Length: 64
Image 1 (cartoon, rainbow, N blue to C red):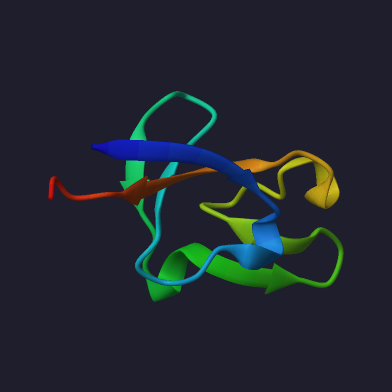
Image 2 (cartoon, rainbow, N blue to C red; image 1 turned 180 degrees about the vertical axis):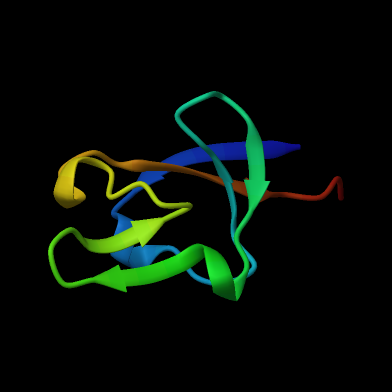
């Protein structure tokens, strides 16, 4: 079972699973998180409206 939560872009880490703006599920790797002096932190090249838009993070909760 997957649970979707909204988090700040700064809370995303390598290995997290997210839903991007095109509703595609993506796994975050080290090359996907970058810092740009002009745009700040970017995820897959998107700054998520300079950090004001939340990132949709997926958390897997296994069946017990």
